[in-house]
Amino acid sequence: MKTIAVNEYTFEHYANAFKALADSKRLKLLNELCSRGQVCVCDLCEIMEMTQSKLSYHLKILLDVDLITQEKKGKWNYYELNQMQVNHLLSPELCCLFRPTC
Amino acid sequence: MKTIAVNEYTFEHYANAFKALADSKRLKLLNELCSRGQVCVCDLCEIMEMTQSKLSYHLKILLDVDLITQEKKGKWNYYELNQMQVNHLLSPELCCLFRPTC
DNA sequence: TGAATACATCAAAAAAATTTGATATAAAAT
DNA sequence: ATTTTATATCAAATTTTTTTGATGTATTCA
Image 1 (tube, rainbow over the protein chains, first blue to last red):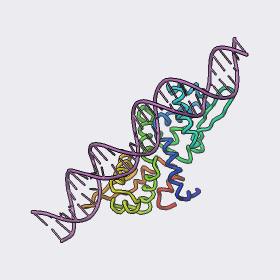
Image 2: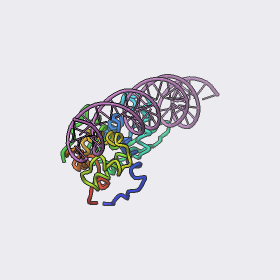
Image 3: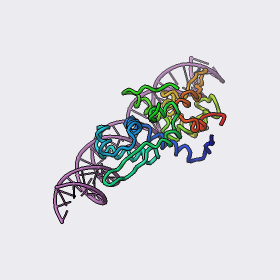
């Protein structure tokens, strides 16, 4: 396993990642993306029972720390869980919450 | 590995744990506790270059989610990293930041 | 072309977290 | 028995995050 070098930005960097995880709506969002795969914003609005602007706000926070990825297809914007980053951050046990097969 | 049951409190519960991790000062604090073992508040004040009341505030947040433990010895209050909880939440890779041997 | 749909972003308001300085309490030292 | 030390906690001020409603920009559809 690669050792993480600690410098003055390390803690800031990970604090940002954990900030993204520090909200129950966003955890639920990750969980839904996990079980559904690629989902567009308008579908997510219904699933999450959130207004579109609120949802976009939370999606951006997750996107900024690479917990999800974005793919534009015509009029739609699809979001998907980034399993790599989830695995990088969370324990295998916790990854279950955001991993299809568990 | 035990599967985590998802109910209406699951996300709130973990969001709280991640909130505690969502601050670079607290991550540095965990890292210091990791390398130093049991440390009392007054020593931590110097190590972290923080006022006592500020430090106590952050210690409480970590204590409330079991990321650290507390032990009172006479006049002093010693805090220590709770490796179990760290392991429960974070990836093995990330645990290195808060694990002595890595 | 004009209307409708999907989405991002902005600014203001509201809510939550953090910092600061003061005060309280218990144990130890004098 | 006072004073000092170590620490928690409180209230107010500050900062950050989140929510809300409005607006802007593509893209598709009629």
